[in-house]
Image (cartoon, rainbow, N blue to C red; front, side):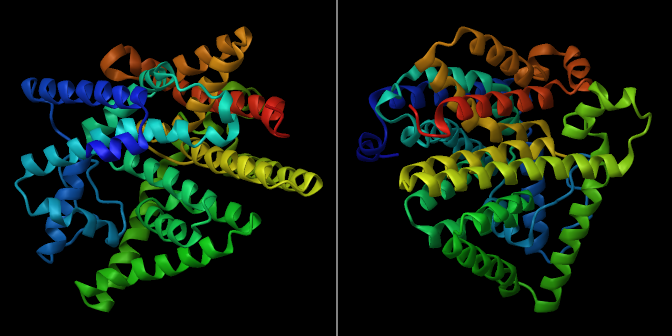
Length: 407
């Protein structure tokens, strides 16, 4: 990053934060190399799958590295990692680690900036908020870099998509969202929100982007083989999520362990479908309620605030609904920043207590910190519970202070 770019986009406090976080993760990079733990096993899957694609070898249903090292992303995603696959593996993963390190602080800062419209002049430009957010999400961020996954970059891309929509640049937002969905199809859950909010240009642009993303790999392989690759990708996704009922952090397992098991010994798939449907209905009711209020006040500002919260609420609950690894829970980072900004403003002691409990549960499965006890904590789904508490606290703050733009 050039000095002119930094001066234009970052305040002095934000610049110091970037230096602190980047320095910390560079130290961790050195320590991992000293300890022989600079593995980046997820990146190895991307790297080797891209190599196989270039060499005309099978990509899907092939084991790359660990027993779980199967490539589960779209054919288009392979093209992103082809430049890395042309380098020796050590240098490729080193460059990728450094890229992700840069985006850690930028993503946290972007999470704070996205709420500027909500808090306005009352939002403090405090480095403390950024540092505390980095600490709370630190375990997930460290695991993300240790594995070399792509979730951090996707979160930054999602925040960029939201910013583009808020800035009336829907064509660019739609194309970026198409790329995100082609990498992680989970984010198709944002499509109903765009439909209800009548973001038609973004939807059309996204549809065009999905079609282009489907066709681009055909520039490298025959069209029939391109179709086969996409069918294998879909099959891989289905097989990967076949065991999602066993994930302790999903909302259905959490509610089953806390309540349902005392009524039904085996709730079954109908229970799961009903619970997910209830979550979808709640979000639908929430969005429709906001729309009704916006029409009654005939004010443009509440619609921007509501859409921001709706967008970030949806991406934050995704890890509670599907089978994912723990670092995916970093998608709640914008809501964590939202809570911290409010707590710094309001100094609500009771809410601080509840938030601390939620944050402790959220970070409580950090294996490098808790050691063998992290497995005990993970068994009871503390991460999933903490994430749901963060969502609940955010909703409480929103309904009490922001749903009618009172602040």
